[in-house]
Length: 153
Image 1 (cartoon, rainbow, N blue to C red):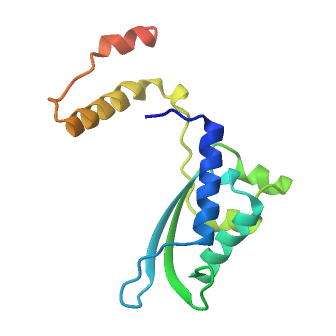
Image 2 (image 1 turned 60 degrees about the vertical axis):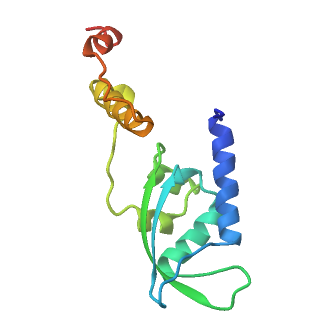
């Protein structure tokens, strides 16, 4: 397994989005709408030209594969995340106002983990349990006193 930097990950995501825009892969069942749930991480970093394409697909509820003459109806749900203030980016012209109002239906502000230190033991135990289940080991437990030392308790 190779560790990648944040900039490499963003570049990879941008390449994947552009590739998907060129050659979308869809599953269509008996001429019904294609149900699509998109999770868009760091939506604030989406280039403006891609924001326009995304907004068009959301508004028209149809997409067209590159080279195709036929549009495919889609039923889309979008979950997006960012650490940036989208309203401020809209004001500065760095994010599409129309797309902002389309995706900003329900906002769930979540403080960063550094502000929720008490959540770290729960998250660590959850991840450890999940990983041990995947490799077939017995359920492992993290001792809370280890975390108390890191939290200064």
